[in-house]
Length: 443
Image 1 (cartoon, rainbow, N blue to C red):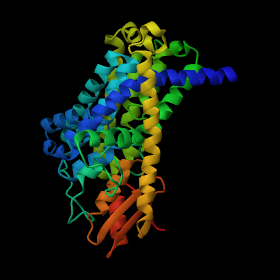
Image 2 (cartoon, helix red, strand yellow):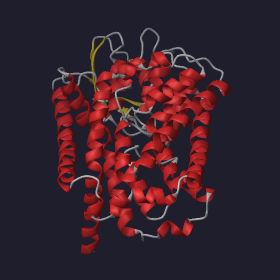
Image 3 (tube, helix red, strand yellow):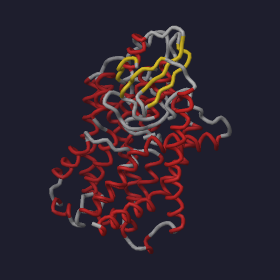
Image 4 (cartoon, rainbow, N blue to C red):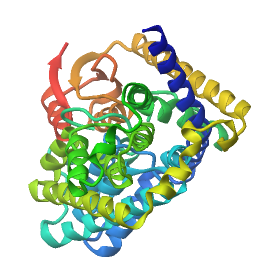
């Protein structure tokens, strides 16, 4: 047992050291992307039900660090503010599969073939989904319905960033409520806050799970465990696909798992299927799309991801030599001479990553606790808020109501505190339900 624990912890540290420098680099780029290219500017490119809008939506979604949770309220926001269903589906399909942070991390763990392949596959499947939606779903983009008549859903709030999906809402790529103090200042301060506080905290849970699960698979399973399934072809791909669709794992958190699966004998095509379907689909995502854009859009969404995963999985196995993939990964379990980066940089990056995770965890809770104690408000129970992006979608949209002066949402307690002179609970319930969360009444 002692040897197992030592081996397990050693594997966790090894995976962290390999991935941390590239993950930090990806976070830096994500922060700069957020500052210079906010999501509320995207909808202007997604308004028409044509191929160009689908292409724009897929292209714009590729670098955004949003997983299948965070992309849902963002996509719904775009749709409610005039994006076509085709463009919305294109965005929902392409965005969670990859992001600027996961591209760097993919390169560090899986090598350049997967680092190039992932965004290409996400881009192509996004366009396919958009075109099919425009062709098969003829409904016009839905106009805002009650309770949204009279005000506009706040795109910036719903487009802040990613987190984890919930059964009714929200799943990548923010602070959670419009009252949370986001630093005002130069670009560097705002980019750093987004990257190492907001974004990192939203992917923290699934990133940690990804590392822990990958290390467990590496230690427990024999090195040739999946070799017995080689030659199964499409059956192997379908098995991985069936396990991936209902599962939630963010694009970055899926990388160490896929890397270890490859080392244990899974084919590159099957690993690609996991990298596609794991981040892009889960039960919560499917529920929200069906309720918001209709069953036809949901069927196109699922059909595109499933069909694209099988197609690109098979093409990867047929066209890309396994030896090429494995040669790019030799540094993962190789000796020091194969390492791409110096040891001191790997260790210092791991320390920085862990320190940022811990600091951000307590920083967020301190700020929320301080704000909560300062507000004498009506408190509501709202379930389904599982990331800071969820908090943002609830807070920003409720704050648009007449009579509401201040809103504070907290995913940790599932509470929403509202301050105002004329608070209409029925209208609030409609809004919360409409944007995909579960209203449980006043506390």
